[in-house]
Length: 143
Image (cartoon, rainbow, N blue to C red; front, top):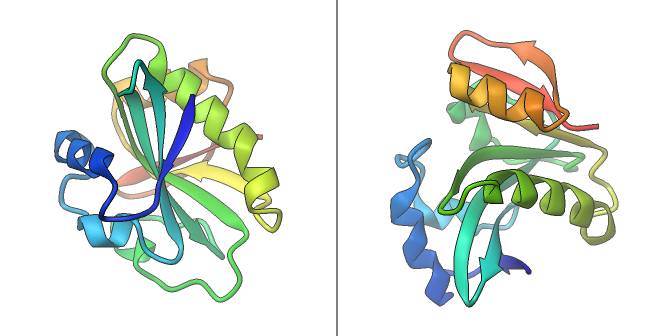
């Protein structure tokens, strides 16, 4: 089941401590006006979590995530982790498929991924393409 965490009061917020990719990003930012957290829930426990920022451009680094968008049209998946094999893939696809109904102005779906072989294999295996190589990150696009 796809679940959305959009409040600091949500009991699942405690799982953010497990973020291996962007642990430095404050929890308050992750549930702000232009951000959300999606979780794939199995037996009332997250099997994977992804954090999404809604932007009006594709960011090149984490600092740009904090730019307030004027009119968001880009969903940026900036961190993802899973507790069960295959759950990360299932979550990114579920979140990607749910967003057009929830946020009709969002037209582009990208990542802000670290430049690691693991991230590259994960995104390319899941059907993404390289949108842009940056100095410290890679943006993969999900069509």
